[in-house]
Length: 261
Image (cartoon, rainbow, N blue to C red; front, side, top):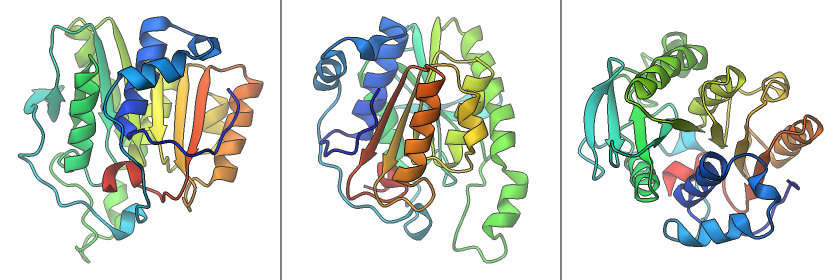
């Protein structure tokens, strides 16, 4: 898949749904089929223009435990926001950024993914303690000691086991910022069938070199953590390793754009 930086008027939920749909339902090499991605993008979800969003650290969401049309239940001992029919055969795990699973826009994305025909799950990997930039007694470095992306991966493995025990035949995952690292680790361990990472952080070139499963990477033109130049390197690595991929940079957007609009 050629690296592109062109205007697109699709929501993050639409892209996640389309990519996961293509990889899980149609299998590998789906993006080699002319027009397939565009057709699925048109069928799934609503279109809305993506505009400028501040960096995620400068504009935290107002958390709302009542947001979304789904509900919260326990999965693998984690409170999890779930949306969609449990009778569905395909699940999508959404790993949040540092602000956690009560972010309204994250739940809206989960609801739209569910509307596309998936069982969407957003776990509370922080056990009720998302990062709070307004808490001077708990700076991010201290917070990360208890909530590292590596721990997120260990927790995500428990979630995957829980979903498999419920009978889901295929599982994809989407990771936002902090959550992208956990999702990439899931691909390296081949615990899922497809992945989407959005404005990723805590990522290294070695991480990408180890990815062998279909992956989409959605970045932002004005991202200081995962710049277009960095994503171009990611794309080159995946291309050299012949990994099915979809890499896109969204113009006039900053880090965190999918959850701050």
